[in-house]
Length: 234
Image (cartoon, rainbow, N blue to C red; front, top):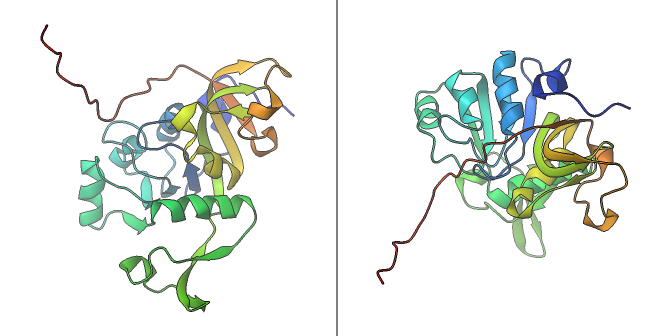
């Protein structure tokens, strides 16, 4: 099975379509599939639902798809840093399903494991729990959350072999692993594709069985908020 494609546009060919639910990896601007997001913008696909920790910033990440109004709904845990997101949400142009961060990660993981739903205490007694089933276990109240089953997953990794085994680098692993597992099709963009057999099996974070297509490319790796300290005087 051919998994390596020349670029993001080719990798999305025959996959991307209007109305899809897409699970996207990344945390802030760390480990986001920036090349695939750009290609999705260029595809012109409309009415997309994104399950992602956040919506990027105005001109990077999922933010570029908000600018072109290709996203109809976000399933997210954090929506700061994006003025266009705020504008569209407050004007009723964009749907938002808020999830606590751990709940969102678990919803993706559950979908990848074929689990349709699970109970959690997180969100009980808040707006998160509205219209959700409540159930008591051992005297404690929990709410039912549904697993996420996405049409497409897009993720960013550090290294891959041609079978799709992936290694993520440090905190860039974040949401990428659970996002990758919950998609019917998973496309990964990586910094380097190495020969088959050269990856230490114990170092692989995501087995290739989850990954259907791979591209290699150059990444901007933008820093969302740069924090520095003043130079000390001699």
